[in-house]
Length: 205
Ligand code: CO
Image (tube, rainbow, N blue to C red; front, top):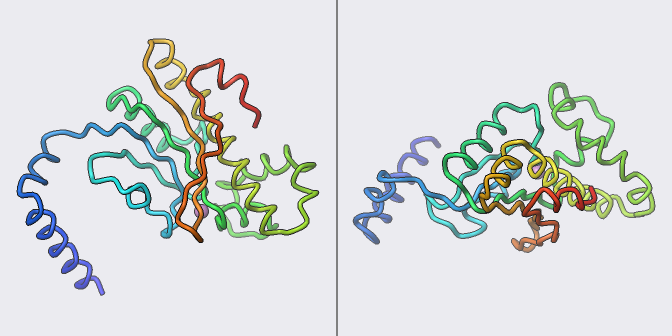
């Protein structure tokens, strides 16, 4: 099976070079992506493929349930590098309907470390319990929680000091909240984009 992956890699590299002989040479030269993607680790949500971008065009951070926790050194390092060094223009927080992480956060099960990782989602569910309680269908209720989680993470990113300081310096950064559908392959923009500290203040999440 791994030999299969290596063979696929060779075929892919050959295809790329056949289409465009300078392809890899150009990529070695520089990395200048305009976008930072913060998405779920789910194998069905391959970041660059969904938005049809080439290598070099998007900086990517993925974790279970697309969280942006303000104490997570991995996420913070990615965010700082994207904002301060790469100077990305857009940060995309992308959840997806049918997210197993979202379901696991609120099903009462015990799985170990992951229960701690998912804790912020339980807090979001609690804050919005009155809205969620009246949604009779479980699938619909969880999908709404996927959306609420994205909005919450947009607020986390927008209120982070790296982003706040960049805005104060006059750097143009937009933080967007999207949700991807596994069923249709389509992205829905939740229209919660923030472009300034004032936008973050107004964001309800
Ligand atoms: Co997921």
